[in-house]
Structures are given as C-alpha cells and as structure tokens.
Length: 79
Image (cartoon, rainbow, N blue to C red; front, top):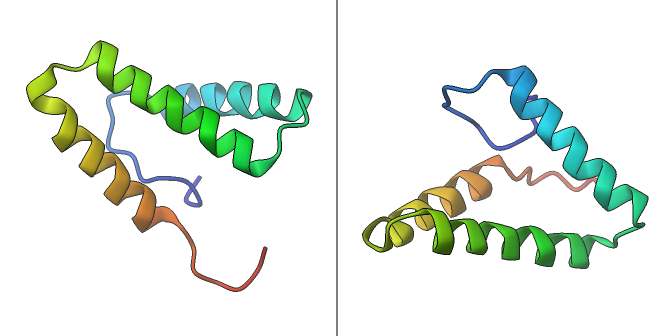
C-alpha cells in the first residue's frame, strides 16, 4: 500500500492493512465526512500519545508521525 504512510515496523503488512480496513469501515458505515474523520483520527493519535507514550518521548514521536504524514501526502491535483 504505497499510497499510505511509510512504515518501518515489526508488524506484517497484512496486520496493518487489516486494521486500516477496519477503521475505514467504521468511518464509511457512519458516513463520516472528511473533516470529522480527520478530527477523530487526530484525537485518537493524541490520546494514544498522551496515554501510552512516556512524556519525554511524546513530542519526538508526534513530530516523527507528522513528518511521515506530510511525506506520504500526494501533491497531485486530483481529488
């Protein structure tokens, strides 16, 4: 899935793609608009960082995540 954020992980592609599929299904089932989807996913990331990552590591991991997200966004003109 090269169109998504690059991953360097101990998890298999199948595991990652399965979770992604489940998350997308929930958003589609609820007819969630893009802005709300992004808000909810952003809040989920924030919650994970604040509850599961040591305080000293949060900013570094958030910056790494943000940089990976920016790198994975296509700049073509298609919608």
